Length: 418
Ligand code: 5CA
Ligand code: ZN
Image 1 (cartoon, rainbow, N blue to C red):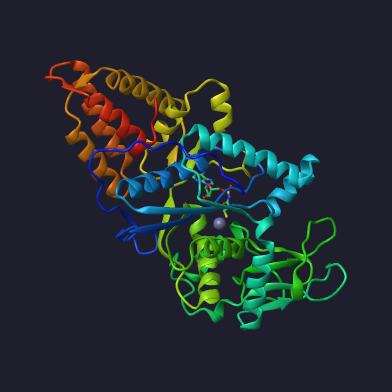
Image 2 (tube, rainbow, N blue to C red; image 1 turned 90 degrees about the horizontal axis):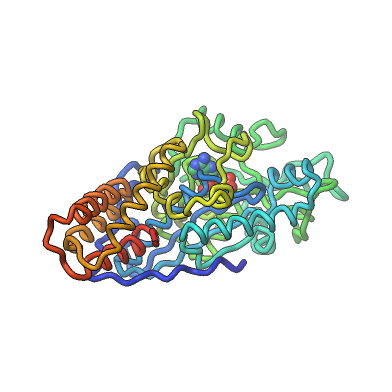
């Protein structure tokens, strides 16, 4: 798929240092990429409803990492997917009597508009599930041939009795090392997040679906020796990430709801496909809530980016409202938070609008240090607030051109553009 146009990123004096992040597998602070290249896969949207603040917050978090890496001189390759065929998308299409392809295309277009408005750097490789079906089929066939996958009879499948294909997790001695959860927790989360532990005929309740045979009324593709059908969820990301970045890649990310089962399973598939490691570092953004509940398409408690923009809200205020929270924390979207971001944006705008202001070097160093320290955006914002207050107070001897450097820095590192 063709991603949205990349924003111009201004160059800055000097260079940022190595970026450290807290790995969600181990809880340790680690260097996100050793360089000179940095590779990142962030799970993309399932396009059945427009971008809400939760999605936006997750993509802004990884955008911060992308920007910090580039500022440190690394050559970044960022890959992502669009889950343009999956159960929830098909269910919504049926419920609203829309063609599933049309629904996916419309919602993906809206997402593109939202990401562009929020100044998110687009992926370098952006792959839809539908276009990756042939490579997924080859990967599943490889897992079957290796004895790492097996067939489960499907009573209602069309035509023959090949069955659905499931991964045999017992073939992967490293299974469980991504999320490091107890068996009970894994089972509960699998049930909650798209798994099917009760499916009869599986060798283990957690074994995930790799290939779903065609069912009446569902879209299906040629699956070679697997028979017509469509990909399971986790294998798609394993294959898309591997093909875009090679294995192992540096960072695999998404919201914290993807740590298990999605990333546990997709890493397991990737390991078995490549006899090696999948992602070096796992990074997960906290969940954004509304009125005490996780914001989610299935619950319907959504604040949509597109709706805020329609109401005339400056997308940079939305971005600043997101950046006011550390990416790993769970937080609530509120009108007050947005109002505070709008006020902050105006203050910053006034502060960077003059020709002279307090020197920029120290602020640049502080913001660089904050983002390099596990993407600590709230700390970066506080440093800019202090500089802006000093600038607007007019008590410092003005340094010519300093506001210009600060403006470029806000743009390059934080994605805030006036
Ligand atoms: N297509 C799959 C990933 S392969 C998917 O999870 N799609 S999604 O549309 O449900 O979510 C897109 C991204 O937004 C994921 O990284 C997900 O973890 C993140 N996300 C979803 N809800 C929230 C939320 N309330 N707060 C923060 N991030 C969220
Ligand atoms: Zn994914």
